[in-house]
Amino acid sequence: MGILNPVAAAAIGKYGIAAVFAGTFIEGETVLLAAGILAAAGLLNPLSVWVSASVGAWAGHVFWFFAGRIFGNRYILPKSKWIRVRFAEVNRVVLERPKTAVFILQYLYGMRIIGAIAIGITDMSFARFMLYEALNCMLWAALILGAGYILEESIMQIFHGWLAWLWLGVSLTAVILFIRRLEHTLSAKKLK
Image 1: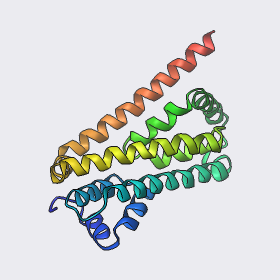
Image 2: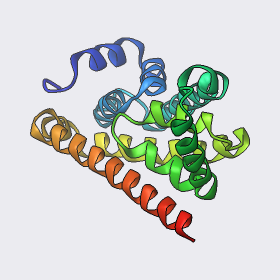
Image 3: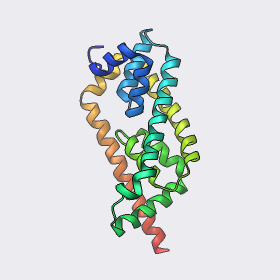
Image 4: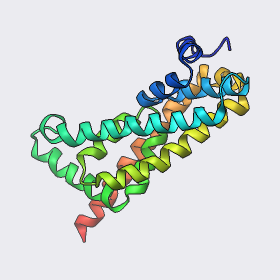
């Protein structure tokens, strides 16, 4: 595991499943990939890793959802009328397609915390968010754990170099395209 993030490897080696929970609570791909590699080597139980990662990611998203819900209107959203009008439009789109909003933000690199906060500011119900996020976190944990388990160290070599930048670029492009599509949809609705 020479290419593996040494901090993630050391934490998982020392604390095991608890480190997987803590790492996925925060963001988690690196920690979960490392845990998948360790599970493939027989050092961790894959089912325990999956459960811990699913619960950790879900708990983190619920925490950030509540941060958005409690502090969003007061501290996060500026007092600008233009921003509030735009946010009202985003709120409407999130409410029209809640499953899509929750799903997309899970898989965009670096957007899970920001996405959970943003969805917390919207009018999406907590119960609906909990359900969609639970299903999404279980799927995400299975995919990332499976990648680490199947591909072992080769995945770390791939994501260590230029592919990490490519993945970030694809994620940013997806966000930009999503925003443009949202603006186009909202403009079309205004014309009607």
